[in-house]
Amino acid sequence: MDRFAYTSLNAINERRLARHVFTNELANVSTPGFKKSYEAAMQANKTEGMGYDTRISPQMEKIERVLLTPGALMVTGSSTDIAFKGQTLLGVQAPNGDLAFTRRGDLRVNLSGVLENGQGHPVIAEGGSPINVPPGFAVNITPRGEVFARDPNLPGVAAEVLVGQLLLRDASETIIVRREDGLFESFQNNTRVTGDFPTGPVPVEVVSGALEGSNVNPILALVKLIDESRSFEQSIKFIREAKNIDESGATMLRG
Image: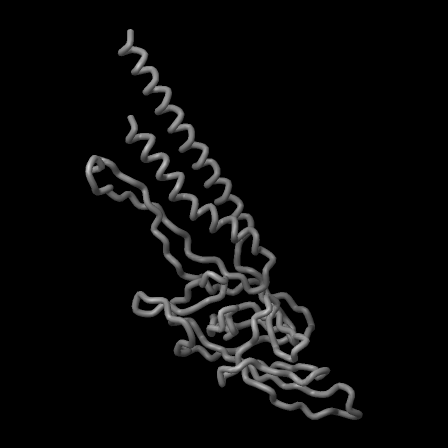
């Protein structure tokens, strides 16, 4: 009877990852550029070891791949907001200094004059360094990712100055996985690769004055989370039933 309880308890522990995934998706429904990941799947595996030869343990098989399907386009009118076409990714500087990628395009110029996104990650140029904008200058970003700045205080039509080229990469032929900090990196030859990766065949392009919404379907994510909660409750009932059957058997033996 303990095998029954053992299998149910392992199912509860293994399904914890799926519950975390669905909860994270619901929490980021309104986050610009958020991308959902492939779902994890349950597999039955034989447990090896002394006393475990007849036990089958459910284990979660994780597939760490980010779905780069576009989200809804939201027009903002801000010159520093950009949305990415196709499966284009933007290079940014991770908190630990690594080059990482994102789809979040709510850009702004911080107090130090560095162009960054809404999460505070500095935007990286093609040369590998952050893009700096002179204080008080207005920013304009072209569809090819060129960043121009101009002084709005000059009389007449002020000339625009090129201050950087966004590091844009097409990931249509590259597996992209999520880092612990929420940013993206490539997955090549069954290994996570930190840093740059070769761009794909599709031309990279951005849309200025708009933001891309999350590609999470909130209704579907909520239904899946409810289903996970019911599976958890069902596993708990299995364990309770196993306990009741075991107690009933022990009572019969004593009688």
